[in-house]
Length: 461
Image (cartoon, rainbow, N blue to C red; front, side, top):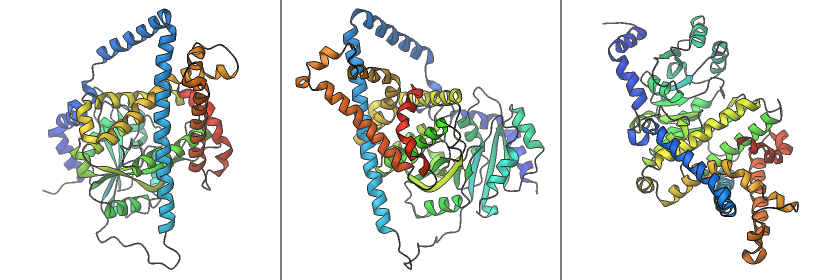
């Protein structure tokens, strides 16, 4: 019986709609999903810890401050050490690439021996009233064969703003709209899980609504997977911003993301550690993505969690030399809300995978396990306990500090000097990574602004 693709899809949905909805919410095994978290118990633990800290500050303030200081310094040393090793690995890789770069007249790179694959890319939209035509215009610049390009616009059926905006737009044949039925959660990962059922490609990608991928990006993806070994299940592209000149916050955000993608993530991939994935310009081998259960519908940083689960299953992530541009978050309150969600997601991801630390250790190995503690738990601790470290600048001004006497008697009286040396060294390392990340022609104008990130990161606290 001949029928249209839409008719076939509607027939499937008529029979399997509820099953597909539940599958989208529960694809990840319960022991690795945030859906089984006990928020009431966590709340009691959090309140208990805050009460204990408050009581300790009253009864034994010096002991509590000393304990917090020790943990803040330990996580700072761990984070700086991992960043230093990552940066060194990036510089080595960059030097090797320059030495291996073919000279003019040398043999070109080998050609693909297999046909180009069908690539499906999901683009989640939410409350977007006027982005449809702009999105079509941006994606139309892609030079991948249209018959092999399968772009899915993913919208919630309860999002009337976006649904009505799409009704009046004539879509090209390579662009489809998938409406996600309502459910107990309305999250991006749940929508991606649901839309995954309707993807035609053997490679699955994700872009954000405002993304501007470079025209040849899908060709690079196809080539990257063709020449990569089978254990490479994910290719992570670079996210960049086209509006860094808007204000200081946009400049700092652009510098931070340049350092994140070209430094932190690239360093983790170079050291073969867990790569906490970014939320866009992600491409997966479909069979590997489905094997690990795709996205956790209940995690607010589903991308970082997915990076952990890929590594636990023996898969690897590589950075892809391709750039996607979007608009930098340049307003204070939205920036704080966004960063709060990311830090919450890092904490959730760490908590889920640390339910069974022995199993996590066995899956990752010692080196990756320790690095993951730094990547997730130590980074959240740094934002949370930053005021403890900032307080030591009072010593440089000759102002009183409860730890002055204790530090003066440690390490032969050199503890304060070593502490300040650590602060300065970590800041210099951050500046070095930032300068390296924005050294290119597009962002060279940001070089003088890199040291101002010292004033930018307190916003995360």
